[in-house]
Image (cartoon, rainbow, N blue to C red; front, side):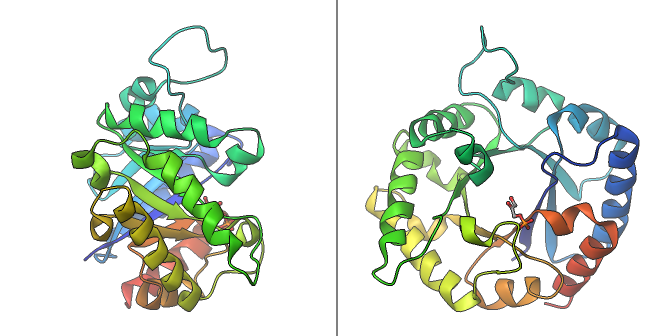
Length: 249
Ligand code: 13P
């Protein structure tokens, strides 16, 4: 089974010229890594031109966000249809940085359902801010999953990819251990199963301080189908090393 690696560039790089260079370096690094399917999530502004210039099939594109409404008076927003039309095949929904900016479970619920009515594959991001010895973080993640899947029709759940990104591991040096991820992956599958879907069919990604040193181990032992990578995906050399590390798996 191929691993799915999603490169979330966040609000980088600052010019389209640099974006093209980073994409080109990423493309070169990805081409030989047969065990990986790659998705690049650039700022939406760059989607159409990157899509136009890229002739291969190895890399797909994702939007980092989109609005649940089909169209209308939403200044500054982009619709799911617009990002799909610009070239995206995936859309991140409920990333921790968007939740920190005010996006709630209810917005996430609407966005996941709306994405499923397009051809986009939603990547539903969940994850707790802190862990407690009593395991309250499991309840927190369960609530996020329940909201995310609330309006998903039974036959469509396996189009939803769950990205588990604990907030405490994003942008730090502190990645989660594969053993803890394995435990969380079981919990995610059980929770999705409890909503009447096939939990075993759900693809799960891990994100949070993944780089060339820990990527391989997480794929091997974390019970995940792939990775959601922030910082390391915006440094061409680091990302090439990361992909190379997965090549060996
Ligand atoms: P980092 O890889 O920089 O920790 O970011 C993770 C993330 O938020 C990816 O979506």
